[in-house]
Image (cartoon, rainbow, N blue to C red; front, top):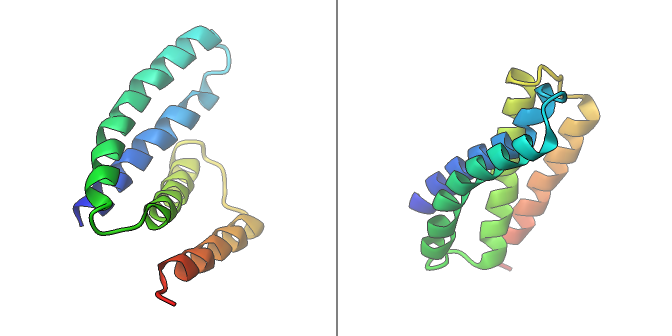
Length: 109
């Protein structure tokens, strides 16, 4: 559970670091990069321990799959709430296909 919580928090910071600046296109790119790096620092503060401790229970492929799933979920919420962009039907289908991929990765064969 600790890994899941840490990776979820990490992905919230990652989504913010990558996409917050889209509302500030007139700001100097150098400033945007510095602010994004500052936000990304907190992402790593959660991601690195989450992965290190998670590797005791999960494989690296499983943790990467979780990270991608959490990233998509946090991006969808961020896109709707902050960017005010709708989720189109084809985005949803694509995300659902990624969920199916995750099921294959976590299934013990």
